[in-house]
Amino acid sequence: MIKADDVLPPDLSRYVEQHSSNEPDFLRNQRHAAEAEMPQAKMISGAYQGRILSMLSQMLQPRVILELGTYTAYATQCLAEGLPEDGKIYTLERNLDLKDLIFENISKGLKKNQIEVIFQDAQAFIESTNLNFDLVFLDANKKQYLDYFELLIPKMSSGGIILADNVLWKGKVLNSVAEKDKITAVLHEFNEKVKNDHRVEVVMLPIRDGLSLIRKK
Ligand SMILES: C[S@@+](CC[C@H](N)C(=O)[O-])C[C@H]1O[C@@H](n2cnc3c(N)ncnc32)[C@H](O)[C@@H]1O
Image (cartoon, rainbow, N blue to C red):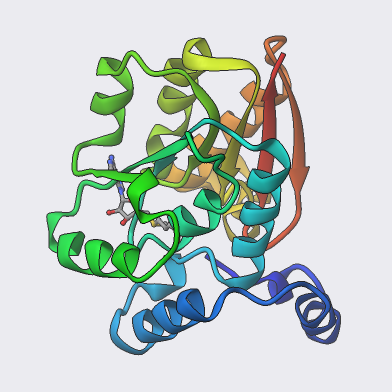
């Protein structure tokens, strides 16, 4: 939600972004169009985090990716960059109003035949699927992060990675118990539980709004 420059001083943040690879032109066009027209466009991963998702996916070469929360399919297409030829990304979105935009964006990008958009509640999908996942991007309903995590762990391949976005929640995870709203409290509980869960290893990256890399042992 917030940009890297909320964590780093603005000059350093600019330097970091300037010295990271650019997003592909078609993704930049899609992002700019959304930023011009959609009030919630700040929910998009953004150029810098998008390059991190792409780089991690290219390093992992996952055969099956799951994304919870498609929105404009920006991160979907970044994650798809690392798919091998027989790989596939499933992305979940509950807002049917986004359907036309999502399909239009995907049709203009790469790997379009390897992207399956599912318009369903994320939790209902995880509960019902028989798929196993090599890489998951958690970016749907923050209040359900713990439920998603518990349901996903048995469906992750060994060594599989869950990327959880917004784990710093604009720094509000540092608020006192009395000051924490519901989402902040759940995200803090999620961070604590993941850290103490013997089934996984976790590294929290202080980029943007916080991105946790969680590896199933
Ligand atoms: C932060 S945006 C996703 C941004 C996108 N992943 C990216 O990085 O560019 C969150 C999206 O999740 C969707 N969403 C929220 N709760 C959901 C749920 N329970 N099931 C499916 N989609 C959900 C919202 O409609 C919204 O489009």
